[in-house]
Image (tube, rainbow, N blue to C red; front, side, top):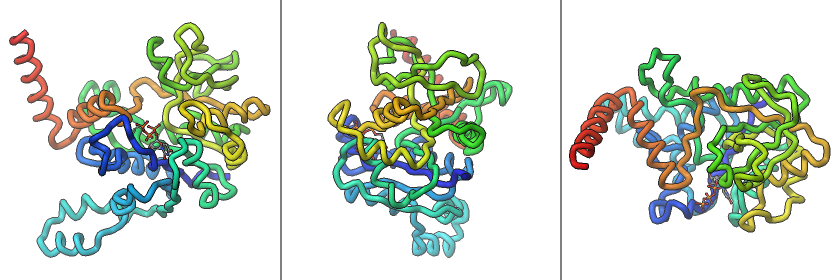
Length: 318
Ligand code: UTP
């Protein structure tokens, strides 16, 4: 069955970014000129996913407003001849259907996905974390070293590869993985690979997932990376999953149960320049913002000059 649906959990409290996220949903924080969630939506749309289900909460109603048309504002811009500004709002009318499911109590990522069960129904679906976008802001080799904007098309390539792997296998789930340095394995769900994977292959077979292992216990350096493609059977597993790490219902625990039951789960590694841009904590948010600002097609050049000057001044002072 073709994959058309994506579930985007955006109901978390975002406590690591307080006080910034007290009234602003972390998924609406800017990355360059757009909220991170708009980048995520464009990534999914470019991969051909046009049914988008946001799992949200009452206190995050600004998210629904961002993706709805504001006809009064559009009319005002039109009559003022502000065509460029009007064009910047066209994403809200793009040919996608937005659904909203409510997560009343923030019981974790796995629970948030379960809240979308009725809307998803009996079809495979992508899960895309609403606080992380995938892709390469600085396309490097592909652009002869020239910096280019983070185009939706190149961002979509990971999701497209996951969909292709899913459609050409009998996998029950496909998960994306990024390679992390050894000292960071204790922050992520880490893959245990079945033998047979050759570097450069599109996918590997997963023997299991180890949540936040110590450096010594880490079975690999492949860390779960914000995109999952699942058959609807995952809902059964989520419904049976007890609270785990941090007292929350974890998606990785449900996926582990699926593997334990003999389910086939594949891992798709990020390629060369592909990265995860994550706004989950201040360090990763600043890093992502700087990188996207420097890659901005309009303001990137002046931002790079400013950055160069600040760094030179800083070097002189020290
Ligand atoms: P995080 O794991 O970063 O959790 O969520 P969080 O609760 O938002 O942030 P902290 O840890 O308190 O700082 C990853 C994605 O899953 C969503 C979040 O909104 C985010 O987009 N999420 C998380 C939910 O929708 N519901 C939850 O119960 C937890």
